[in-house]
Length: 555
Image (cartoon, rainbow, N blue to C red; front, side, top):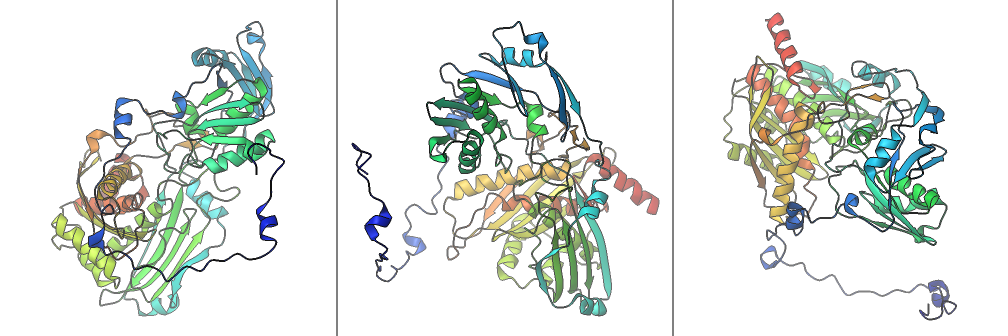
């Protein structure tokens, strides 16, 4: 197209006239030997670190444009509630406040956010709310009732044949509750419309999806929409949906002015797409030689990631019932990806069950894993972690508080060992140290990889020990950090992140795999410390004390 005359243009199809244009390249060049790399494998610190620690980094909430308004929006008390009536009479004489009512969107706008928020509280809204049908106690029975038939993840041999040769069988159910993303930055967006073009500064992990969604919401071509993503103050899978961007764009169109929508902490919890509540049922068997001979595995609503079998088991079947985003009627609110979605749940169940088998067979848990593995990469990673940790073979419970867990996540091999201390009076668990060995293929930036591993391990302590969304039907009961407990600096254990040398293997992402073992490794360490097996995440002090009380009754 001629830049000076838009009428002078020609398409690629017109130029090719239907012909196939090909160019054959010479044979592939030989790849460099690792010893020749000048950039790959060299440690580099983050380029944005100075901006972030000094506060100069710009997030969506820091963007300002002339004439912008701040919007505060009426929210339902529970998910699924419908507006029955709206009374804005208390604001009718206030000429500074702009009120918007557009279908499901009821908002007040003002040049100052605190004024808009105060005005919002003066609007009276009547809602028709659905009855609460499930809560944290009944959710797992509900999920089993509504679960679809399972799809095969992996399988081999014949379960019935395996049951015939098993000398001992083991059966258990593992649970995890809803978990919030709890990002530092809440969902925020600023939208500005200039004639027929829309610009949105949005805190989002999916800018291309946001572009299409804004296009559809405003009824304009997508090429007229520009999405700008400043720094994001945490995502972890929780900023893949762009409700705040759509709200800002709609309000900008309705008011004719730039509009910023910044969710409060309460709104962030309410509209979060939580990691789903899920459960796993496992039945397995072992031979007299301590070989796992069959493994029957069903996971409900966590998805298939992490359910794949990597142990050497002749007869196994892994089924996944329902996706992590759920299915109609499964969850009373939205669910979605949460750092290494699915694999956290599946690894907790799988590695807890492996430890149960090892303990009942009176075999050291590391030795039992190695005995049932043929995968040399996994064996190497496990042995490396054991060497760095200083593992000494003893069957659990040994009273030491040592735990081990391993996994393959998105092709990355990871083995984690942990040492814990359990206060039996309070039920509190203190993680003293963690060693995590990871084979992620060729490591591009060792410093960046280690930072990701350390952050992932620390974040994993949250879903393992405290993080749980309490609810009653569509009502979210946790709306801030006074009741939703995330990891604190005081929890920080001694962490050793070990990157395996694997230059001949293609590079893989290493930011999520370390988190997947945290539930399993801590559960196994708790059992080793006090002889109590916990089957439910998070392993809160209350659940630990309940487990101890149950063990005393049995004893």
